[in-house]
Every structure is written in C-alpha cells, then in structure tokens.
Amino acid sequence: MKVLRTIRFDASDDHVFVNPAQPDEIAVSGAFAFAGFGPEEIRGKTRQAFANGFLSLPGLGRATFVTVGEATEAELDAATDALATLLQEDFGAPSPDAAMSAAREELGYALELAAGQPLNTLLTVHRKLDDNGDIREEYREINPPGLERPHTRVWDVSDD
Image 1 (tube, rainbow, N blue to C red):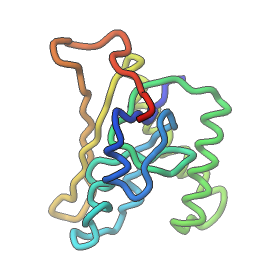
Image 2 (image 1 turned 180 degrees about the horizontal axis):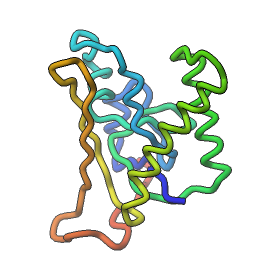
Image 3 (image 1 turned 45 degrees about the horizontal axis):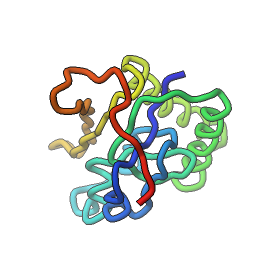
Image 4 (image 1 turned 135 degrees about the vertical axis):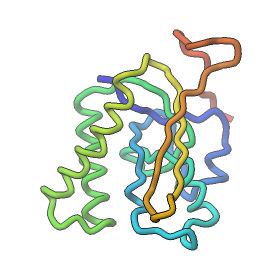
C-alpha cells in the first residue's frame, strides 16, 4: 500500500522543529494539531511546524519533506493506533472509538495523496490561515532539476 513517509536530507529539521521526525516514518498532514490557533499562537518553531510540517507516526515528530513509499498493514495499524492515542490523550477525543475514527480519516487523506503518485515522489506542504482563521493547505511535488518526473530514487539518507 502506498503511504507518505518522512525523509531527511540533512539535519535542518532538528533546528526548526521542537520534535523532528525520524526518517522513514509514516506521515500525515497533522494540521488538526493547529485547529483553533490564531496568528498570535503561531510563532517560532510552532510556526515552522504549522507552515511546513508533516506529522510522523508513530514518533509524532514533524518533517519538512515526505516521499511516497510503501507500508505493510501492520505498519499502517501501528500508525493508526499511535494517532488515535494522540487524539484521545492530547486532543480530547471523547472516546476511543471517536479517536480511532478520526485517526482513520486523517490517515485516509494521506493515503489518497500517496495513491496517485509514483513511488519516491517527493512532496512538501504549505499551510496558512485564511481571513476566517481556517487552515488552508497546498501540497507541492518537488522534482530534481532537469527531470520532468523522476522514475527512480534520486536521493539517499545518510548519517551525519
């Protein structure tokens, strides 16, 4: 099954996010974490997470980039469980069933984003608050210079 997976090209996420994602974790948008925030609450590292961060599962970190990868049912179940726990414990979901339903919906959206893309497609997100205070998201595919669309992996993750 195609999923979004976090990727790190360098250590920059360590400097811009409070909790940077580990490489190769399943990712979702995670915009729900900023619901109800006003411009005054979106500052510093919170602003970076709001504007450009995907949420990783199960680590609950933030990543600037994701790539389309594959996952097993077991990995997807673990990600769903981690997100449901977060939604209940930190975001006040009224019941385990409601948390699980919301987690499945959030993951479903990420799976839809991944489904239409070739493996190894690199994506970023840009979020902003509109005039009504609603969160708006735009996703962008990043292609290497000189290639219309990559058909092979064009990067490696290496330890610093």
